[in-house]
Length: 73
Length: 416
Image 1 (cartoon, chains in turn purple, red):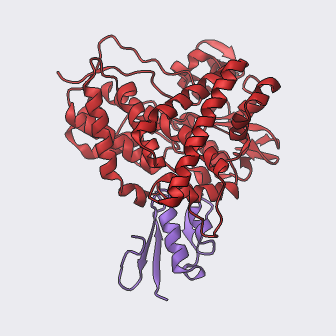
Image 2: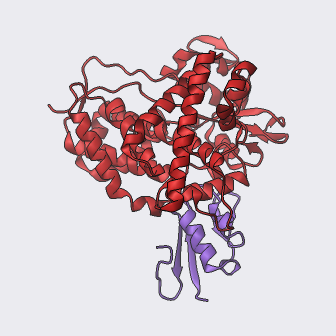
Image 3: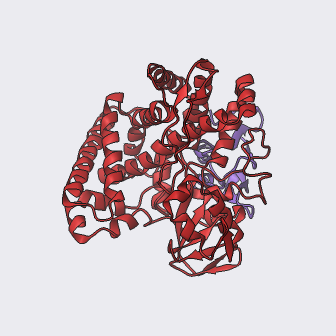
């Protein structure tokens, strides 16, 4: 399985938690009420891409850690 | 004790409940904010919350502050004789759906509704949106007395909802009939048997309409909302037609007049603020931040209601399990502790973090669409008619629905 780079634009995040529902071990809500990445290895690539796709403000990016390729599309 | 307009009152809800307050509610919102983190209103029968941090706190704690059952309140207060005649209206009111539900129902509905609405899906609809805007602007321009609210904002917003559902422009009269019937039905505290029967009949027509489209979308899937609602979720489960019908109802209410309200208010704001208008005319890239500022300044959805599920606190104020809590987005969006000079319409505001689209799990699923729709309509109308002006002699009349902020009309002259 390829290595993923997952980043969250904290300014854009509205605490919707759609990402937490798609990939529970990967994302969590922090004290500030925004999402953060806990452990990229805790979810499958499909789950993580689904989390990024479902974000209502498009705050999550998922790229191939080696090539930089955008995996959300 | 709060002082409002010179007279001393203890319950800001008393002012908020008066019809004329809808013309300018901001002094009353300030009174709610100044009264403390949460203040009980006997008149409204709810806690009132208007501070930015407190409103955000309530919205984020969605398991403590439930959204389920709110929609049913206006059905439950109807006389039994009316309720017996209106089983479909009863189902719509009492079936938790989308923004009026809690997890796990909410989680499932949102996942399905999200499909055609996430930013990446909306981005692919740009051309479609532009052509609908242009068509509506053409029709508006052909009028003798063009009106931004009634000839652009409302028909455009409805057309977009109908086509997003997967329907066609010819379906629009049914949606209009439905909207008007519902308004008439719920505006009457004791609707007559005739009104109840007529409203139930329109609901029946809309149910059959939705079901016919669902059957079609099962056969011929596409990228529409109705198609997304019949496609099985990741776990292979589907939801039945009646539940989808209720979701459509909630979606129509949440999408149609709210976005239209924002577009109408956007032009009102720009046409009454010459410097801001000049900046937007000079640089179309400022339309987007201008729309963001507009939904802060005149938030289309003024308030949301929640029910406390346990004994809790809001900013230190104890709240008992079962208590209704009304959060005023529009008060939070003008909180001077967060926004400098909050009553000023300023499209250059930095670090914008208004709560116009809510926050947390119920953050508006249509926010991306509303933002694109609002900014596209604004840009295209100003491109075509840069000399747009408000018609002589007009004064603003805000509609009297206390939950929304919408102009009744905005007549304009298109050219100099």
